[in-house]
Amino acid sequence: MLEVNNINVYYGPIHAIKDISFEVKTGETVALIGANGAGKSTVLKTMSGLLRSKTGSIVFDGKDIKKAEAHKIVRSGLAQVPEGRRIFLQMTVLENLEMGAYTQKAVSAEELENIFTLFPRLKERRKQIAGTLSGGEQQMLAMGRALMSKPKLLMLDEPSMGLAPLFVEQIFEIIKSLNRAGTTILLVEQNAGKALEIADRAYVLETGEITLSGTGKELSQSDEVRKAYLGG
Amino acid sequence: MVKNKKGVPRLLSYAINTLLFVVFLVILNSLINSGIFSSYYVKILMLIAINIILAVSLNLATGFLGQLPLGHAGFMAVGAYSSAIFMKATTLPNIAAFPIGLILGGIVAAIFGFIIGIPALRLRGDYLAIITLGFGEIIRVVLLNIDSVLGFNFTYGASSLKNIPKTTTVTNAFICVFIVFYIIHTTIKSKHGRAVLSIRENEIAAESCGVNTTYYKTMAFVMSAFFAGVAGSLYAGYVGILNPSGFAFMKSIEILVMVVLGGMGSLIGSAISATVLTVLPELLRSFSEYRMVAYSLLLIVVMIFKPSGLMGTYDFSLSRIIGKSGDKISSLLGGRKEGER
Image (cartoon, rainbow over all chains, first blue to last red; front, side, top):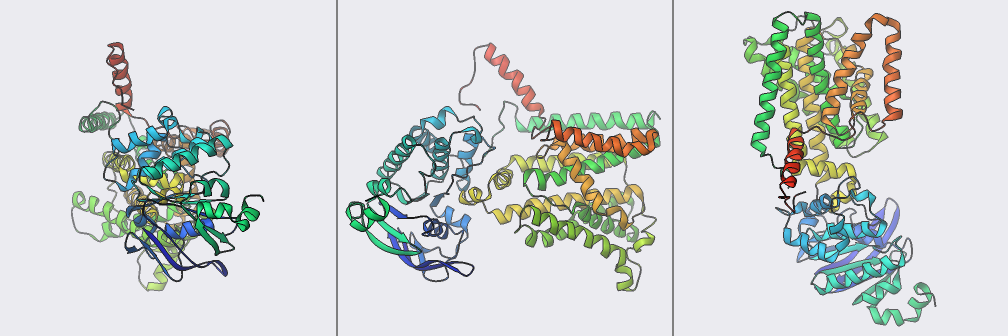
């Protein structure tokens, strides 16, 4: 579904992503793990068109989206849950979800119902101003909002960041069930243990380069990964 | 995307609003014709209308789009001068020339808005403020000196553009206010308006929802400039004489103060504060040297006790009030509809 070949991304003179290639097949959950500053978010931002790669190609659903504008990429079915949630704080929960369906012709009641089944908490709070939600609820809202655009591929940027362990557990459960329901997922995480648990395949990113790849299981048992990310 | 929230059909609510507006105009005109309102009041009324348009148009860029442009007087000046030069040159009867002049003023200002918006909107916050501030000053200086560059009289620079036909009346000024309100209100309540609001809330999130942020930022900015140009045209037809010094930096600040005082993101707030800030200095005339002190004190007091402005983001809506009482009645009857928000 998503094929990334030899991309190079720069922040001014800084070479942030060095010749990375990876792929996400339809129906998979793929995790991109790595330490702070490894370039995980940069990769996602490049996928969603917020940053540009100087070389290579990003083929999504048969089309090269490397040069497409961000808002057009969303229309083609590639949705991103940005890092740090970034919901519309002054709008209500429902309005946030409606914004998610911005690329659709109309807000689909069915989709909204799906999201409310997935996140019952959001239904309870649908008239509440989004800024008054807790961190975990905001993460749920950000995910719900991205799902409103009916994406083929959902990219999640650090969904567990700054959340209580209980919420982290919940969020990962939801990601799992989303994937079972047919959404392909590209997950960027620092919480390598959790990410490898649910990922079909994973890539390890170190200072802008992919150093390891394999199935979630393989990687969680690999010595290198255990030492570097899973605490021995 | 957003259906009319409460029970009142949209067409009906527009009809009611139009009717109320016509009644307002009739009352205003009869007050003027009967001589209860002297020509002094008439002048203040026109100024109120112009200031309302300025404040509401700036609110579009400030309150709804969330940017801080400081060159609004520049757009007003561009509109005023283009319409004034047209009005002086044209041989059309005033009734035909007036709307053309208004729209011309708006369009020229919008073009300038577009030209300045493309580079300026890539920046945010303080940087955008500085760029637009610079732009406002450039406009003023150009208007002041362009004649000597061109070699013939065009804007008449510091000696003022005189004998502009005084075509602005209370009636046509308030009709403009009504139309501007109508257009901005419907835009804000539409899908496009929601896109603009989402940019204010969080630009990256808006982009990740598929909003073309560059397009909507430019659209809101150009619209804001257009209406400032319209207000400028009205102003030209109101004073009959234009001098670049009237469009200096302080004028932009004055408009911004109206927006902030009224509440960023509240159209009715802008209208109220534009009215108050136009009338207040006139009321305080008898205190002469103290009036700027009172004016400043008002601002300080409001900012301390109500930093979101007089109205916050609240917008007055008849249908909401009717809808609320309608809800009460239906809940009394036990017929509360579920699923309505």
